[in-house]
Image (cartoon, rainbow, N blue to C red; front, top):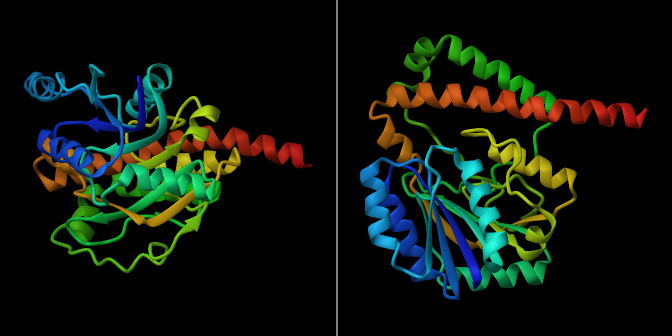
Amino acid sequence: MRADTVYIVVHYMDIRATERCIRSIFECSGDDFHVVIVDNGSKTGHRSVLIQKFSSDPSVTYIDAGTDLGYASAVNRAYGFIRSEIEAETIVVMHNDMELDTHGFGMKARRILEEKDAPVLGPDIISKRTGYHENPYMKGPRTLAELKGMLERYAYVNRAFRRYYVKYDLGRRKTYKPNPFALSEGEDMMLRTGCLILSKRFMEKMDHVFTGCSHMYMEEDAFATEMRDKGIRTLYDPSLRVTHEGGSSMKKRYLLPYLREKKKWKEKEKALGELIDILEPERKDEEICSV
C-alpha cells in the first residue's frame, strides 16, 4: 500500500471527537491519504461503532490495541505498522480531539518539509475553548535540573491535593498570555506532540516516535530531548493550522473536575519521574565523557 500522507489518530473514549477528526482529514488533506486509527481499549460499544463506521473504507485502517496503552505507546504501535505495511511520504500524528483547519494540509506540509529540509514539523494548534495558540510549547527542552524541580512541585501538589485544588483550581478562571513563539516559524523548539508531522527522512532514521512511553504526559519533553540529542531538526510553521478541543477523553472518563485534576497530577508526577530515570544515566555518562 502507498499513500502520500498517513494520519495516526489515537482514539480513547470520545467517539464524536474521533469522528470530527477523521472528517476533517477527509475534507482538508487534499492528497492521497490513509488514516490509521488506534483504539486504545474502548468499551465494546465504542469498538462496534468505530468498526461499523470505518472498517469498510479502504482509506482507513483500524487497529484495536485491546487495552489503554497510553498515547505514546499507541502512536509507536501505529508507526511500526505504517513503516512495515505502508509506503508513506509523510506521517501526521494526531490526538483524536484535533481537527485540520488548513485545506490541502497534507500537500502543504510535505512541501514545507521538502523546502525547509526539516524531518519534523509542527503546525499552529489553536484551542477551540480559549483561542490560545498552544504551539510551540517552549523555546527548547528543559534541563535535568528543571525537570527535577518540576517533580518536587508535582509531588507536593499530590501530597496536599485537596488543599491545592480548593485554593488554586476550584472556580478559578485561567488567564492565557499570548504565546510569544506562535507568530512566526522557528527551529528546534519544544513542539506539542498532539500533532506532529514526520517526513520520510524521520522514518528512515527512527524506529519509534516516542521514547520512554509514559502512559500520559511529558511526551513533549521526551520527544524534544531525543530530537536534540540525535541532531534531528524540528520546525514550527504557523501557516498550517489545526484546532484542539482539549481533554475530551478525560472528560468522558472522569465526569467530576476534581477527579480529572487529581488523576492528571498523579499521572504527571509518574510520567516525570519515569522521564528523569531515563535521562539521568545519560547525563551522568555525558559528564564522565567530558572530564
